[in-house]
Length: 168
Image (cartoon, rainbow, N blue to C red):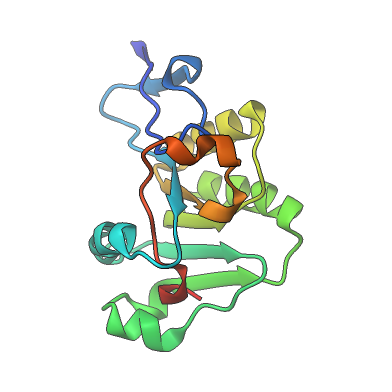
């Protein structure tokens, strides 16, 4: 029996509203999800929450994928954060627009427990594509968005923040 979930985790008004996200899920079989993390480079609050999750997912047999079009991931930081350096894959120097397609394909493969992507502004269709891919691949996808990309009108909303220098 297929059920529909109306819950779509998001942390800013720039994310798709929960009531617009109708994602089919088969009870007990699919655990994938997509979430958007809006961060401020000067405050490490989300990193303190995200790193333990990444450590736990790193214990799986699957890989951790970082899609960072313009930054290089620090091996030293990975080691200091106790993340499995031998299970981390990074794609950088790719076209930011191609990053959405790369994230969707990676999520669909089922080879990755988590895919973190620094993506351009997404359409509702892109968000639904990524949500479906995460469910089918039983993977977590995190859309990383620097606070500077958020429209000034959205600044009053409550957001989670991540210190990006930890990752780049």
